[in-house]
Length: 194
Image 1 (cartoon, rainbow, N blue to C red):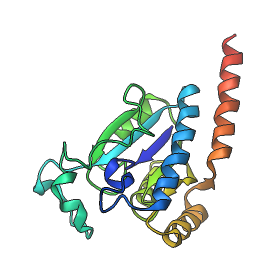
Image 2: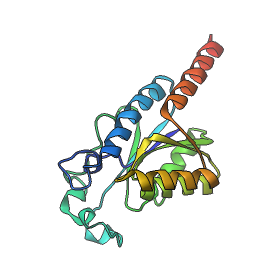
Image 3: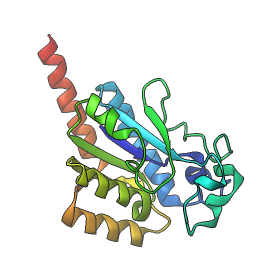
């Protein structure tokens, strides 16, 4: 399954304080290409967004912008980026902690889809993406982090976190390799069905 972390407009649209990173914008563009091929080959896609029902839901984040009303359910920062989100296909949900796994319905979805490998994209590499990689590994999945489908505020934290995770928890690959793999296994499925 492709697991997409936090590509909501609050992180991908320059109108928002946290949406100005050119590296996140690059990752969204690459992820859009990858997801188009994933969906065409019937690969499960799960995505999440950060949001709060009230002030009581907010953790002790050091990022002040996350305390703004735009991050409450229904707020302006909440919609998923339309370049990567297909509401007719994707399994989408809210989270209120760094990992896409923590306190969410993701494990049930992945179990029902008989998933053994998670392919992770999203932002920010040094925060929520890294937490999601570690949790995916901890739950026993094979983990693939797609380097050019992940983004951060700066390249330094992006590169160092992927290098560190690649030593311990995951394979770090690029979108072109994942796309080629999806097309290869999609072609095998079609041949087997004939």
